[in-house]
Image (cartoon, rainbow, N blue to C red; front, side):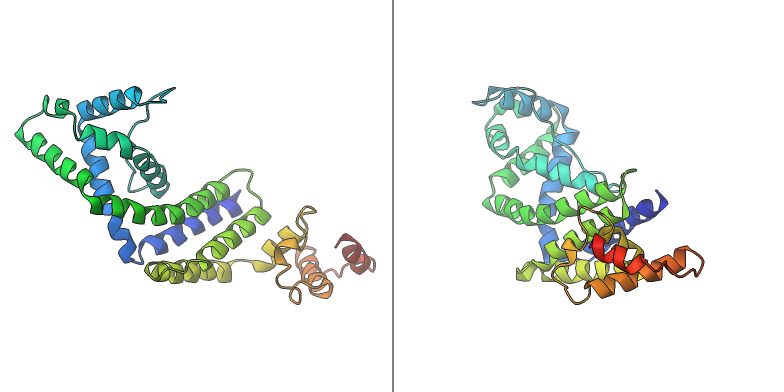
Length: 256
């Protein structure tokens, strides 16, 4: 439990480095944040938005609500932005509904006019398109955080999760994402360098469903002799400098 709990906070440290890299791409989140804040502060607008959803063709079930992320819980930003993207059609209809001016004072009406200008601005929707890239970054980070904070998370799952993050962010090829790529990969490498690597690698190898399959791209580092040396080293560490039994090598070879 304590091991995976610490790895949950390691994911949060990666996110901290991700957000702190000050990439120009993050500028696209300012307007969506302001729009969410305005909608959440005007309950009657949320009511009109609900009525619009219920009147749209193909509607069934329960109307969606606008979610506002919490600054101290970064994982809440991901579902908040995902929800906003689903409101695009309803927001366009909202801007043409005169009922939005039936409540509030002049100050709130000024904010509504500003909101309408934002929604009808093509650059705003372009920023949402750009935000989709940020959403693609937040999704694997959110999954990693939820995975590693689970009470049932095992060491092998932590390794696979971090490896998946490294793979995904290594594939970023846009110039706008270069700063993000460098920051996240450097952060992941820093966390891995500080980890007890032998224990985590052994946890993957000793999972009978995985064995050495996740490391097949590194055949020399995870050859049978290298795995035997790794497990022998851990045996001596765990069993107070006691050498493994004579059958240890054959048993490991048969297992692999």
